Amino acid sequence: MADLRQRLRGGFLGDVLKLSFGTLAGRLIALAALPLSTRLYAPEDFVLLAVFLALVNTLAVVACLRLEIAIPIVETDAEAADLLALALLVTAGLAIVIGVPALLIPDRVAQWLGNPAIAPFLWLVPLGVAMAGSYSALQYWTTRARRFGDIARTRVGQALAGVTAMLALGWLGFAPFGLLVGNVLNIGAGGISLAVRALRHPPAANGGIRFRDLGKTLHRNRRYPLLSTPEALLNIVGVQAPVLLIAAYAGTEAGYLFLAMQVMAAPMALLGSSIAQVYLSRAPQEFRAGSLAPFTLGIMRRLLVVGVGPLLLAGAVAPHVFPWLFGPSWARSGEIMAWLVPWMALQFITSPVSMVMYVTGRQRAMLALTAIGLVQRVGAVAIALTGSLNAPVLGFVVGSIAYYLTVLGFVLVAAGAKPRDLPNLLKAFGDWRVILAATLATVIYLTA
Image 1: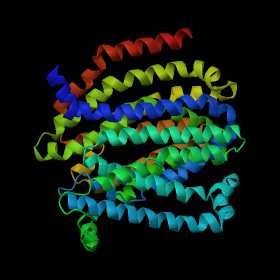
Image 2: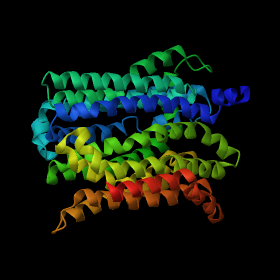
Image 3: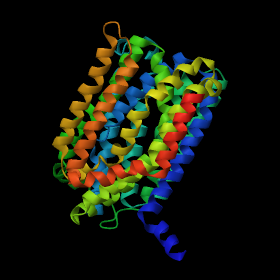
Image 4: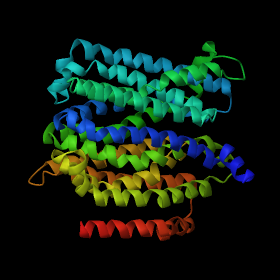
């Protein structure tokens, strides 16, 4: 028992559990609020939210020029502190730049986006980008120190702040403003508490940030802004551009898709993001030790066993539960959620370990991968919108499945996995939990 407590306190499992608890609590808070928010806000408001988050998420993912990823990877605390300073400075600069058109020509920007209704709320975009970018940089700094409990607490805190604002403003009749503000708080409010904790834990090597050396630090880590930034931009555009296309050409279908993706992300958020951060904190050591391939395959096998079951069951019950849980007008979201299962399963298995591309210095390959993904996903939606098919959501799903199969191949090659290693990974499908979940999902689907 003492040995188990020691493993939980300092080992991989303990780190994952800390992050998972915070992620689960935050996700449960957000999910518990959804049945109320779908009654306070109309499907059209969720279309606006989908467009708004597409903008914020696209800009936020490159707000730090991807320098935040290097924070837990570099060898010295001094260099990590310089990278944190650079990431925060770049985020502030980007927020100012995008704030100018958002404040001066919001109507024109809204017309470019194909959604004129978002014009009065564009001023929230630079605020959301600043909060999300800062939180990301500070989260990676905290990851370097392996203070995962701090990250877990911020995830709970910002979920509470976002849900409270969203429901209170919706109840007072401030729609869709409350929906947007609540989501801004949910993605970045935790940065304040992480900043306070970061000030309490200055880098031990030199006691502070070396502002005179920021240029040298940027030069040493230039691969991240030069290669990882366009890669991240292509990746997020591959996700968000289809949403913008669906919102522009299929109206409320984007709102239904947004709700389905929010709910389907719950089992992924529980372990996927937590394992990704812990994986990144340990993968550099495994790489230097020559054990990256078995380490990566072991993580993927765990993800298969833990994640496939909940996703299958969620897809099976969604068409029958959504109208009751969220209201009759949201039945379409339940149907869409069932379509998402294969896409989300592949994403759940591959995304947490995709950081192996950065650990092994394959930024150019990652850039090529995301360019392929952009073509696959946006191309599939564009094809689905043409002719008599007119099924953009289905096109988005098919394109995303193709993309994550491609990601799987890239990850295995980068980790150094051999063809003989794959049978051990596929054995996860023989686990009793996966078999039971698949059986239950089939029974539910056929009998409900």
